[in-house]
Length: 250
Image (cartoon, rainbow, N blue to C red; front, side, top):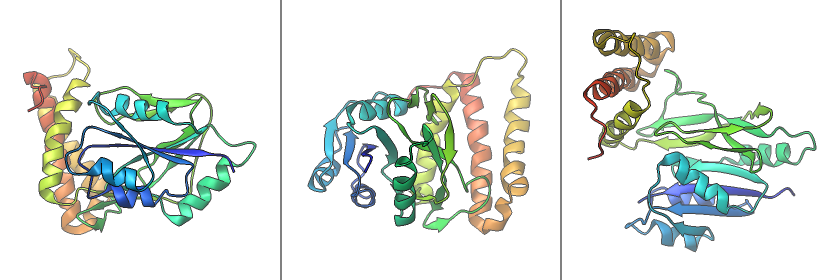
């Protein structure tokens, strides 16, 4: 069978890394690039047969590209530690990469769970991301946040989703929102046509309306309302930090 390498980056992911690696124990190899975790993440990964490499933090995209560079297989499946590959998705992956006319990469949907609840609306599903690709045809585009894979060639879509157990609590979510807003502010292009009033009022309002009404977040009940409000706040915060040049990590 065509070999596939799974790549994962981690820092203090002891809670997640075991389930993640066990969901891909059928792969030819699992590469974990760990940022000197202090909770035993690296030891857990090694005990499960993963190849673990310790690396200082270089940013999300570069960190993932470092992991890819260490992989030996012609196909890469890039995962986050809180993601899981289901048996149906495994079967589909093995089928598509064995075809002679396989695409250079494939988008995989994610079932995103917020506080153990699957969020079906508000743009949270199907949430396609290009995660399966040929090593010689793709890599992560280096940017501060919301990194994505770019490939040379055609891309297809898989049917079966992976499970993504993101944000185990509201506190966890708000902590990461704080960090991501700083990183996102770095990526906002400096356009003279933008006014502070416009971006700090209308953009957050549009974010809320889009998630809660246009994308039917209202159907997810209280979690849908919370996510729409918090995404609006995130939009406000990243533009406010852009204007204030508040980019430094705390």
